[in-house]
Amino acid sequence: KDCLYKITPCFTMKRQLDDYYDRFYQKEGARGAKMAANNYQLAKELAAWKEKVADNWDSVEVKDVQIPALYETTPEIGKSYPVTVTIDGKEIADSLGLDLVVTKNDGHSNDYRAVEMEVVKREGTLVTFCVNYNIKHSGAFKFGFRMFPKNEELPHRMDFAYTRWF
Image (cartoon, rainbow, N blue to C red; front, side, top):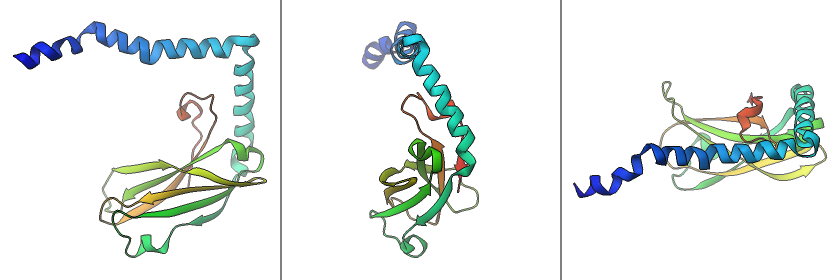
């Protein structure tokens, strides 16, 4: 009874509305004002960026993928191993993000883990991404990479849903 007395106020409609207001409506209102400022200058820049990415998306090339051979034989649980990918981003080299996606190799698992890789080097249009991936579970795993357009003005990466898997 004491627990019900203490937690019931946390599950009211007022709390839910307050959460929506704080977490969503207030942030989107501020974002809308930011986009509308200066005769919609930021909105125009974001639209031009999207157009540039769309026009150049198919020209991006994967140049090199470095996955330690240990991943294929006997990696140790609890250790981190570097995974490195170099991409020639051509005209949109500064607009790319990359995830390492790991899933169990058991033929029926839908469980996966995605880790965003960090840019560690830029040389012209070549961008090198790296992540030190920590093996946390035993088993056989498959590794893949998910490339996506990246812009700090996008509230969520699915607001511009281009994706390339390799």
